[in-house]
Image (cartoon, rainbow, N blue to C red; front, side, top):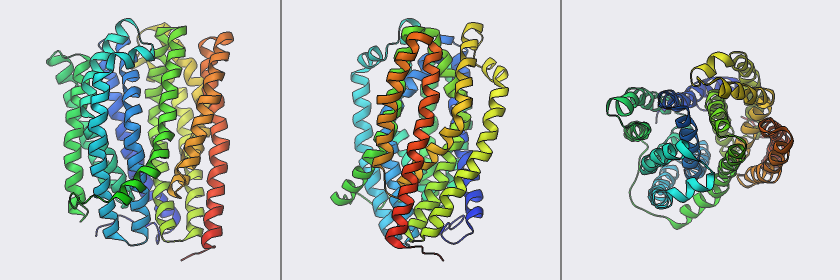
Length: 445
């Protein structure tokens, strides 16, 4: 077996640094993938940006199931690996891939059949609606590769091999950057070309993942379906899926509220989402770092290292990304000018960025805390936080604030809900660490 680092034995700070760097770079590479698409699509029309971002959110709504499966898969593999149960980890991975194949094909069919109805519900109109239909009709065909990419990346990270998942994302980014202009402009496919480019790039990325896993003696061991394992993956993955599903679905409702106020505001909101993904994907990288460190030490029943690992990652993330948050905000004019030529839309985007910048430290802690809870096998309560905080707090708040403050009321509701999510997720994480310590005692190496 080849490992980059063993989080159950190495010093905590060393584990945080050595695991977080490739994981943040990997997530950053995913963000570059999205930004490249946004950059080239923005050259078609500003309405195409709103269509791309909205279509991507709809796709992620379905792909949230892949996140659930990959979270459950990564959670169990990290636990088994920490406990040195290697064969059990491979068997679970194989069943996860089988489950992924079935669900992804089903979802592709659902989106293609009900495409017009889905876009009508979201509230897109005019050119934005036309572009969205063109993009999503192609993008849905690649759900299978997106699902497998997610599961394989989670597996590589849980095996303490984040540098390999980084290689895959760099490869797919480079390939996508070359293919985007070729399909969009040279072959005159327009926004459809961006979807084709993404599918082709991710397909070759999946091939590369299987090769890297095989080289590290981790592989699919055949069609040996185990009902109990499938049920375990579904049970834990269900709430992890809901965790993302509630967030993405609330974003679609938010877009509908924004669209009622102003269609250009959809593009302004969409561009800021893409710009702030620079930080969000770094947060995800650090959240995955915490997931692996906490998960493997939980499997090894080293509760002292579970607590130290959790708080070390949070402190590291707040210092690093909190600083970058303000760097991003103070360079907002340059960043927004890369994607927006219309001054009205650009000024609206600046307002969105203000509320994002003020509340982003809370996003950092909230996101990592919820991921730590999942590493400790609590996927239910973080998903319930998302449900109540987004659907029963943020969305009603956005609606009522928009009546008085228009678009700024919506942006304010996002900032306020980021704070409440922080309070709830951090509290749940703390209780989960206490639960583990009470169950296994204060065990150390």
